[in-house]
Length: 158
Image 1 (cartoon, rainbow, N blue to C red):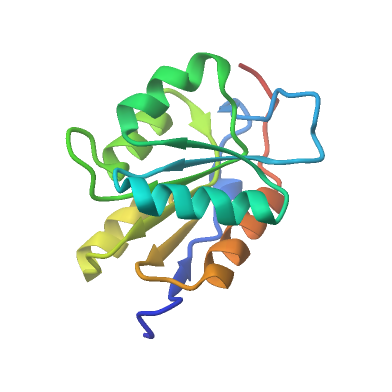
Image 2 (tube, rainbow, N blue to C red):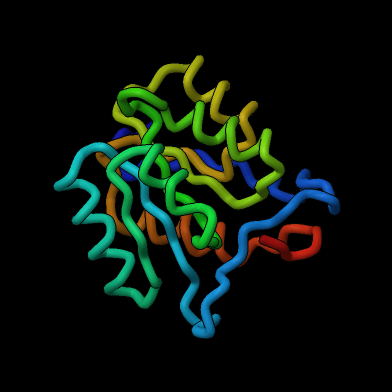
């Protein structure tokens, strides 16, 4: 597998049950999907945010899983781009928390620490995609576009 631009897709979002709450963009500007990016590397976070905004996405960035969780009561992204290795709460722990709370949103996981165990754990956690850092811009854009276009079953709420 090519390290640069590598992406493993786990396109099984239809596994979300119809009674699961879905995260949806609550803004009036539904033509611009809202993407959340969570990474503890501030420069990487800025770069990814700029890239996604440059192609028309509305983007909110968070430097930690805790910052993301604090925003959830009034924040409803259509896709979460999530670093796996973060202090205090990892991306996989955050994804587990979202699932336990009944949230169903496509999550694209990123890591620079690729192991078969990490990929398997990401797949088991329900990740929509898996990007290996460093990845090229187009790999991220393709993964986000696929996640946003994904039709998850259920009724919007929250």
